[in-house]
Image 1 (cartoon, one colour):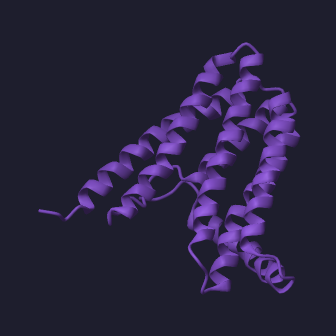
Image 2: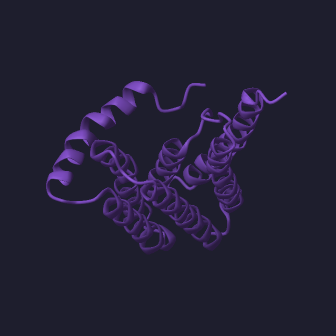
Length: 204
């Protein structure tokens, strides 16, 4: 199943990420340090800026720090062989960062009177975004394949980022609209992953 972010776009990200990953490894920076630093940055952007209504800077900081999700994984692959703890740490930090982003958005929209039901959409996006990741991880632990879906983590962050920029530009409907689109895509993605995992189950 094709993702929203196309292969060429991901290749462009890799073109930027790979040289940065090599440089950081040469400097002695570990993938785990990048993971934690990225999460701290997301927390600052989401809670320190986004929740207070500073949507532009909140979006910029969160987006920049969220890109470390690609960076630390690239560093880990280049550093191979590596242990399993890094993968666990990365997944754990991703869940914390996602909760901070959507929690901050819901808090901000609640303070604005919940325009267009945006707070509800933010909470739906948060809940189903967590389930999207859980289904894939749980399926893999059971030997099933659930690596499909329209909205993976990168797509989810990009969509809410676009909504944040629209809101920062003075378009009140922009952030709620992005969240409603994201909530729908997240629900669809959960369904896609469950169906694909069921089809991959070859147990008689």
